[in-house]
Length: 284
Length: 291
Image (cartoon, rainbow over all chains, first blue to last red; front, side):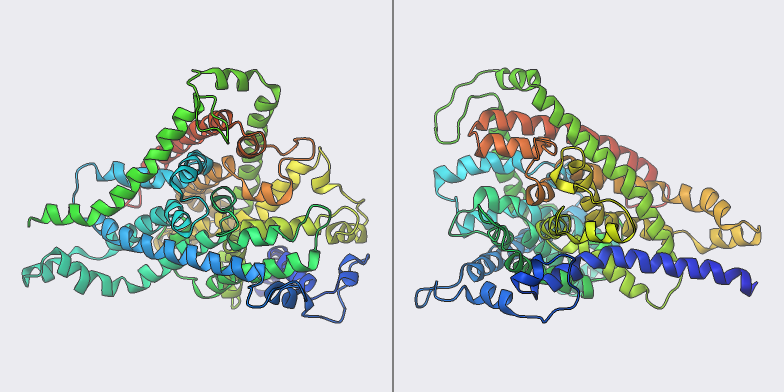
């Protein structure tokens, strides 16, 4: 028995190591690249041993030497700030609108609620340009183009369906008896929501908001179409390292690593609710 | 205040937001039937002209074909691979948490970053992939830089990013199999292969449909990986419908035509997603009452 099991588990372990390698190697390689100077980056055969430098990060965060006016922020830092404002604002707005809506959809017995819920979901499946290209035309007319308000509003297309569907699935999992107990004690719907439902859904709300933040932060196409010099997000900042005549590999690698930090943190700490988040609550 | 009014009030702000999103949608459909240009506000209704022009254009039909080929490639690679990884993760192992973290990482970093990472590694002259291949005696590949290999290379990158998605969902499916079923299979002396065919596979069919729903719709509209790696090149070899529409609008400023192209893409993905969604709801009714 034991001898028969050994080769099988050895094969399993080998397969596991192989797939870790496949998924981790690219990230490690770019991380190494972000620590190399230009000569080490372009050397062939590729260098695995080199003397690391933080020059790329320094130039990304602090700007190239001698290019900044006094009091001016380096470009990439402005992109980072833009992304924080846009994604942070978008998630807060989505939570404000989406959590009560999700509760009403889960418990309210509203007429046509299935259709409404699916209309929200259908934005998840629609090609982005279907909405944001006409949005661009409207934004340029009403002055929302290249503004934080416009970006936060448009990012509701990402965040709101996520928050509504994830929270709907959380609320449906809460036993209705808890609410009925509160209602018998004389609490109305708003009080039940505030004093009973929200406290026990804290972890759910947090993970829904984190996932919405990550997807908003990671997005490129909204910024590409709806943002200009005043509100470009961090994902566009990485592309800027690819100028017309050359690619600044080291800077690109450093910028990419910095922009991936929220996702990396979430990957480490957000294990429990990740499948629910990725499937809009379809898989618990 | 009645209960119903309260619920309605809770729901109203989100509904207003929905209305706000439907306005550009309708506006966009109307634009598809006009000769709207990027920098002129005025435009005229021209009926189906944009659609007729598009379908008369070989390049447009090619990009529909490319979009479908990309989607098919994604599905046929990622679902079996994801299933394999899910089965691999099913057993107990002390480093399972590490495996899971590893798995979600590609899904949570920006797609642009994933695209640029792979573009770097796929450089034909200095990239690490060709160096790795040369070590095992495989000749260097052209990857993203050649017409014949570009689309396959993007499928490879997409596989790196999204196979974890398939794996996580299918793993959740496998873990939801009631222990009694597993136990029954063990008592009957079923081997791993028979157990997979008779118990695991039938049980996870709804989960496979769910993965297909997300992966098909996301691949049809895939944009960011293409934009970060090839932007439709070389020689239009990776010019999918979504990329084409973007170029029509912002490079050639033919917004009307761009909207017509996106509208075609939207119709495709709408009908496919409706079909898969109905399949999924019917299937999942079996062991998930919440649907």
